[in-house]
Image (cartoon, rainbow, N blue to C red; front, top):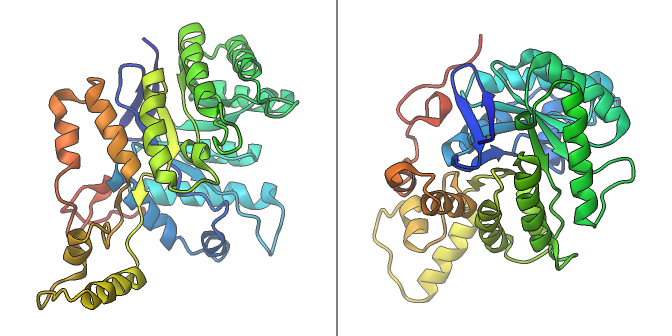
Length: 353
């Protein structure tokens, strides 16, 4: 059975058809996050620290690291991204002990990440484009790491699933020429938005089955792409992920964290409750209040997508004795409770010297 091994210095994550679904946390990525991009350019890594810990606490088993900031002071990512990638990886490895996924379109940043990462990271990514194949595959072989293979080539992203399968097959075959086994190729079949293409869901499910049966490879995707542009995106994602898992998908790059309820929303809800004539007990804290009224939490915690994934693991017998499901449904850590390395409660953070 195909197994893709990804390792940190102390932990192993396994992607496989008979393994629990692998959640690759996507939050450490400045793309579309102006505040994070500005922080990174200023040398402020506080959000990176929070995102690393919150994602592991929420259940991410691998963290994606993307340093793709276009600096205002220097718009050349070939110069700025490699040292930033190194700095982020060293910081994150000092906070959490899960394996990493090194994510960049800049070749030099990929190699900088490979040099900085402990263990056996996942490299993200190679495509079917000739120049990308010629640079990335030798890196994969040199560092003996698995790689995400994205199903597009020099012609772009095809809407035809057969073309995307052909690109994936080409990458697997070219990798074999370098002595890279199929179990070290994790194919991203490219999820299209269901709002723009009504067949997008069925295309992915068909592709994943074909990739598993004919190429014997593990698969991943940008999970939230399926719901782009539509209302109640979490509802769509919650349905999509277990269906993709049922088709054979073994991992996803996604946000495992439900963000905290804002003070503004809490104040609005309290005003609404008061206007309805409901008298709240004296000393009722915000966390109890938002829990009582089903608003979520004042702390970052696992999102609804994680609930769907945990349930699917249980239903497919990839959760021994239901232990993970039971632990997942325990009450969240109380505000102020310390979080240790790797997201465990009760310890202090360890920072790299």
